[in-house]
Amino acid sequence: MADQNAKQVRKMYIAIEGLPGAGKSELLALLSLFYPQRITAFPELVKQVAIREGIEGFSQRRRLTEAILAELPRRWAEIEAAAQQGVLCIEQSHPGVHLAYSKAIGDSSFLDAYSSIENTLPIPDFYLRMEIPISLSLRRQEARRTPQFQVNMPTLKRMLQHLQAWHSARKSELVHIDTDRAPSEFLPQVEEILGLSYEGDVNSLKDTFEIIILLGRPAGGKRELIDFVNDPIASYGACNYV
Image 1 (tube, rainbow, N blue to C red):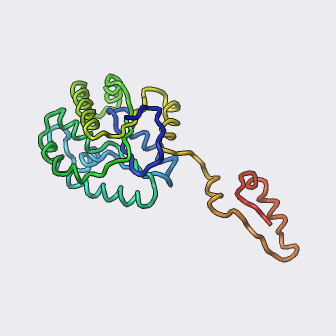
Image 2 (tube, one colour):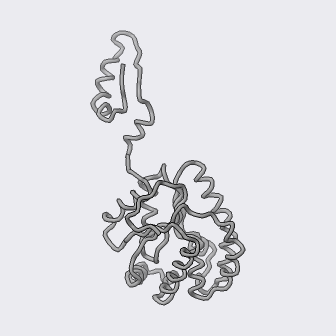
């Protein structure tokens, strides 16, 4: 397994996992905002389905399993379509996490269903785990004021054990990153792991024209136009003129 300082070559499909409150949703929101042309973010499927269908995640497990199984093919098709467009697909959580939670709470419905779908699941190029202590997860869950999604300490402990066993059995490429620190400290590390580098609007100029040949009649304003665009653009090497 890779440690949290490991460097990764940019791949096409990454799954992010971690305890509740680790910052998964917030991280994906930031990456989507600053890299809209380079990544496609997929929210946690289990929570998305539960909210949309009005399913109580802990007491209606069989109904939740049925909804997840119905939604998985659509999610896989969306990931495949995005990957074919050449963008990095980043998914929050993955079926292995839900399996670990199901084992932790004794949910036989998903355990039985998982064996029939496991071989059809897309395999991420690697998994990125956002690490925080369980005690911090509990505090952050409380601060969110969403009791329907809160998970207690015994369940989280059992879930982590099952998830670690799941990764070990599959020899997953699992990259750990400590997110029990300021975002300004771990965000650059995430960008490095994912091969992302912010370029802003300057890159859009480079992608437009490298050389412009300006034609016109005498006194048509060619030199004046060159003088106008030269100062803000030439320093970036986006415009060479003849």
